Amino acid sequence: MRFAKLLVAAATMFAASISVAAAAPPTYTLTDIGQLGGGYTQAYGINASGWITGVSYTTGNQPHAFLFNGVSMTDLGTLGGTSSYGYAINNAGTVAGGSAPNFQYSRGFSYSSGVMTNIGSFSGTYSESNAINTSGTIAGWSGVSGGGAVPVTWSGGTMTALGSLGGSYGYAWGINDSGQATGNSYLAGNSAHRAFRFTNGTMTNLGTFGGTNSEGLDINNNGAITGWAQNGNNTQTAFIATGNTIVSLGTFGYASRGIAINDQGWVVGKSMDQAFTDRAFVYDGTAMFDLNTLIATSDPLFGQITLASATGITESGQIIANSGNRAFLLTPVLAATDTPEPAALALLATGLLGLAAARRRSAGTGQPA
Image (cartoon, rainbow, N blue to C red; front, side, top):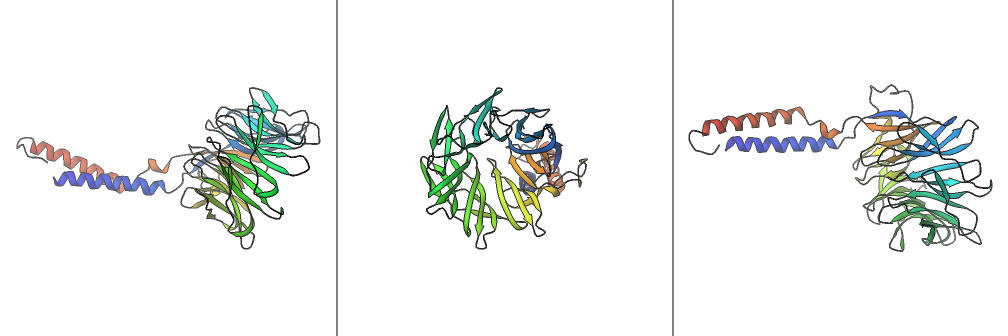
């Protein structure tokens, strides 16, 4: 019996070691996703396959939305003007973004199978597509007649306004597979705006940390939201909200904002340190880590660049981040859960060997080990 107890103790310690190890984020390798010829690329969205969208300058120095499929970058073109931007991509490879069709007004678009579709506008002027879920529903905003803007969703050719918190301007920045959305909406008087949660036709004000403004930038499939809110000094601080209460993620010394969140609750974004330098971060549910300190020492770019902002994270832990005029895909090298503590492994091995020996000895006596 004592050997069985030893095995139970070893297994318990082994499991505990994995749990402790899992609290630390992995290290990452860097992949430069390239550019369209103009020397400037920024990544804004990534899907489960590691496909990426964003903006890259062409050889003619025009900003164009792109699709990177892990091997090569494709220029998505425009709606007729000179510029376009890709902001989000779903698992089907459909891209949401914005493009100026007539050099005057930017319009939101949906891009799929080589076709860029203009989502239109309530006012005939501006609109923007900022996020897209699995079913292809887009979240963004549209100008309205008489001025102002409203957060909207767009699906199957139909644009739907989400309402407001009392002001004349509002914008949706994230949407999940249940159709919940987040963004920011101005209050009555248009002197302040607040992050909101939109669920089943109701827009809820998420408040601030005592400051004037806040903004929701992404929402996962569990309804958790990340973004930023101002404190009493009106300094931006990254937050996570699993209900309708925002919780600070902290900073590296000055300001921060959460930009994207996956279904495990990991958040990526950027934080300004005390030297007023932007640094990309990942929050693993317990603490905020500077992604620049998590680059594998074996990576050729280790110590050569500074990641300023992280803008997307997948369920497998891949991250997109930007540094100057370059964009990178960060891939986990080895999950912390794959490296249990040596002491736990030794104890587990001891327990297994002891139990085996005891069973052999008891085989001739009929007594339990």
